[in-house]
Image (cartoon, rainbow, N blue to C red; front, side):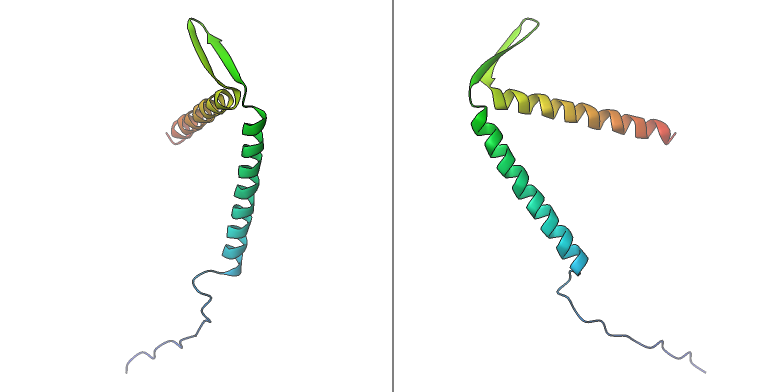
Length: 91
């Protein structure tokens, strides 16, 4: 005797995304829009050119660019240190 097939259930299609996914997408889009607006305000308020002196090097650039470079270097250093710690813990 053959095994009976399990009953099939039909689920209404939501276009591939659930309401939770749509809500998450909206939150990410709103957050990104707010960050872009804050970035534009930051750039407009920090357009003056500044000179950065580090040891024997000298760099002249807009203040917003210097701060962005410093923030990016800090982020990169933090990311690398976190990855190093994770690799050490997994051993």
